[in-house]
Length: 212
Image (cartoon, rainbow, N blue to C red; front, side, top):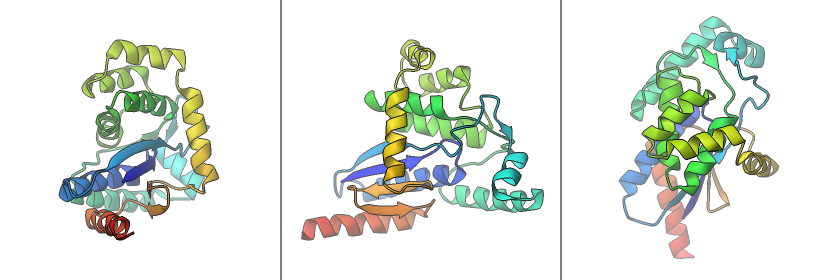
């Protein structure tokens, strides 16, 4: 079974969905073989390097008031806690393109999931800038990647074309919101679903494969 997890680093529901999916896969154990591929998606591809204040950003993009933002963040914290993820104070939104380039390279090294976990915790738990070269280099080391090679990737712009092409392909297939989980290229599960939803859906899909 191939699972493509399409997401952005600064998307809170992606953090919830990723933790829920990983927990579901742990519960499923070795019932069937799964290949998990992390795919790029930028919610704000035109975000400048200096980023934007979160309250102003949400007001501009969604028309959210400060009160609505507080309610939304409270819900996100509750949902995060249900899947074992801690949301801390987040006051800023940043560009994530370099993070996706580094994730692409990490995938070639077999360490994408480790880097993804580190990136999500850095931004959503500690409020760090996932577009900062210093932050990205530190997280690469935490994920068990070679820091020297990570620096080369960041400074050279390497894998930029590959990330852009992957993003284009997913949008062309109709993916316009994240997280989106695509199983074997034809089954779509959208949103930061609870663990049980992922577990049930994957088991049902696997059962259908066996039956076919």
